[in-house]
Image (cartoon, rainbow, N blue to C red):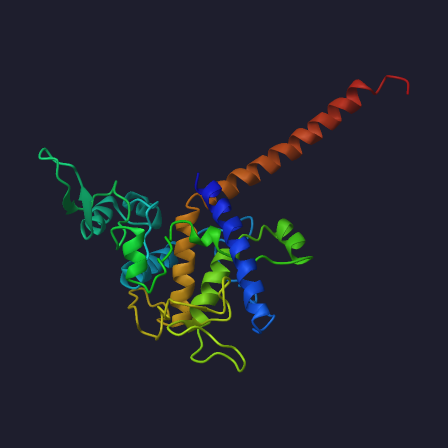
Length: 284
């Protein structure tokens, strides 16, 4: 279901991005929109044998909790799934209890609030989409659950052909990392942006966005494992965490795919040898 929702969202964003490009280009904005950063090669989950770095995912969770969760929800991610990041059951229970979740109705027919439990999902910081938009200048912050699969700049011909063979599926994390590290204080000469927005050449839906730089200084989040406390590292960690949130079974999928390929290779060889044996004595 997540993959279907991600695909539908990606298609919608592609049309939206194209419309935004046409509008900005006609208005005299640069034709190179959006800009492209070089493909990142350091994702642990990249390639057909890639796996998630649990330490990085835990750091990404920390960045989400301390920075991103004030505006962005993760409605499709349950607290209990955090055990896949290496946390114990007791740690997950303690983490969930830090959140307040609305429940009910009770025997009186009223809704009530209680501490979260592992079976709950990450609660939204806003009661509804309208409230989220009103608190953020008219633009509701997107949910993070599928964003790493829904966002991503399409790579043109012939690059996308090579991506099929290299199993490149990191367009979302690459884009998120580029966006978070791509803010500039002033737009280039000749580029005008609406008041109250922030210029970012990597944003796929326009030349500016309403979200201010969420990661604006080194040391903003304290890591306990000795990892660099820099904006670049924060951006990588949250992008990796969002990739896991969007596709938590990536490792199992890759293992299954490898087994299927081996099976098909052996099956194909057996079919060929069987054909040779059956038709060996038949005149051609």
